[in-house]
Image 1 (cartoon, one colour):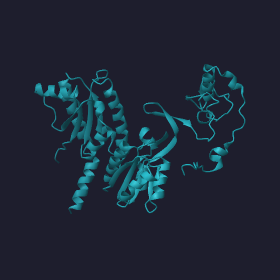
Image 2: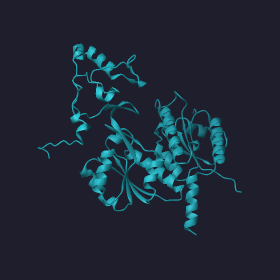
Image 3: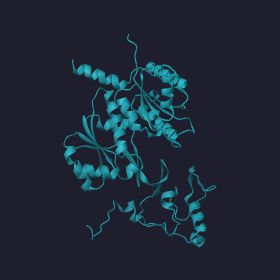
Image 4: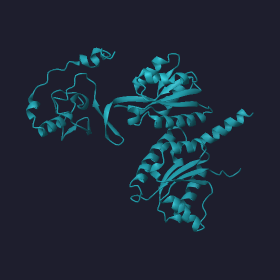
Length: 221
Length: 147
């Protein structure tokens, strides 16, 4: 999922201070799962903002709505009748959702209420960790299902480096060495010989280095 | 000056604090009428939004009362409630209400006396902190609006 964290209340307040009526929009997808911008967080932020502004002597009118998915124009269209009644929109979706809302409602200012962080997985309840960087050329089949791009601090293709100690990364003892994990996994699978294969320099054009990316499925488009 | 009488909302678990409050009553042990009890099936059932709404609607203080550690009827609802309370305390600090207006307490169903003592202590603490600033601002706003 795409993970996110709520911005500090003060930063959000700075965005919406000039406005009296706002539409606070959540998303039922990734940000709901990582507890950053679903229906529940929309309710909490709405209440927090109303109380914070009341202390400044301002009654903030907040309309709350959570879309099934904010990164799809079909769902964003649902907001049409509501956006007319407010001065600004505050989105709790990831950056994709914020941009879709901003694209659809060009006449209204749209602000983000969360910082979109990374593509990750739940390690346990309440803990999410980065797992994928969307490099566009997946290597997991060669590395025992552990991504050296997302999980090695140096993104080494032929690791580990000298900073790997007792299975931990030199940047932080809480970070596991991805190449230690890869080696352990290959060994468990009886695929140690794969470790000896030298990976050539990666073609980063499939990643962000080739500029903003698009996928076109002609049978669907 | 008139003595400030805080409004305090207490979310009390049916299996412990609520029963303790009942026991305080049976013992004829009085506790401050400022405490408004809301019975919940487990302290773990209390959500952050319930606490926020209580403050938004004018509570000066809120506490969540669950079972003693290890005694939760639903295994660990009280521990989850304690973590949720810590989270809301930080949010209250962030918006200027102050996390010290919110507390998590634990007790058993037999602690009627303790319930009354805790209710009095929390009432005095909130009295010391003064009114919820949001409530004050809203009253000020109404006064200005009515001229």
